[in-house]
Image 1 (cartoon, rainbow, N blue to C red):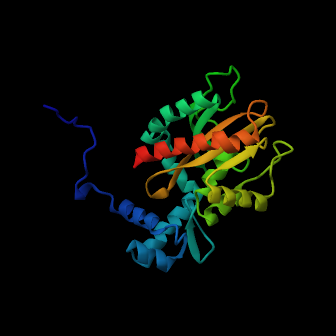
Image 2 (cartoon, rainbow, N blue to C red; image 1 turned 180 degrees about the horizontal axis):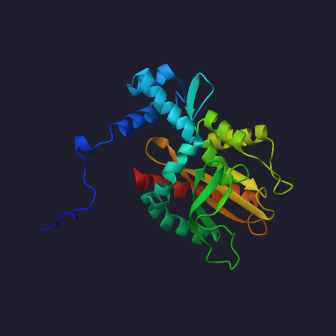
Image 3 (cartoon, rainbow, N blue to C red; image 1 turned 30 degrees about the horizontal axis):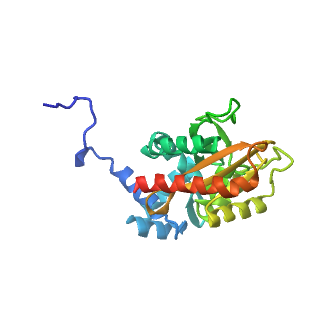
Length: 263
């Protein structure tokens, strides 16, 4: 018969629960895609709290960097995404994605990645190196790149609300990593909008000369973007036309297979 370790966590009784933490979760859940910015009164109403309680929770979130305010309205910040990244890196979504991307890398002969957004950066949580080529792109699990100059960053930003994506771009410091790097924040927002509309993004030598990449969003239940899939290769092997046709079709199919397994 199975027995529980005395030190193992058990479901908490009512007496053991931290009720203030539960109320904080209600404040966080009050913010939604259709109401990303709210007044104190609106937050209190949607969270089922008094104005005084809602105010304390909101000011705590602002102090910790997980919310912001213009003095009248409050909004959550992209930093809140950090709380989910440890889970995302070990989540079953990437266990499901690994064999799918391994098959894709074998068919196309290039390296594949899974990634999530971390503030203004992209965090790579899955890497399938190409088995056909001795020289691969020098990005590994745990590597980070700026979101603004990568295809994976643009589709991940496209998964945010336009207002949230604008805040991430505003917090970025675009610099010309190559002569092709887009550094205009207005132009970057247009690229993010296009990625949101089309469901994919290509970046041609903006991160590094000689490197092209293609990315598509990976969506979970309810269509929420939980990560992105990426394939990249050197310009000597991968043409833009090939990225837009064969590679895009294969990557979209891979995303669809993973998403179907998540539902």
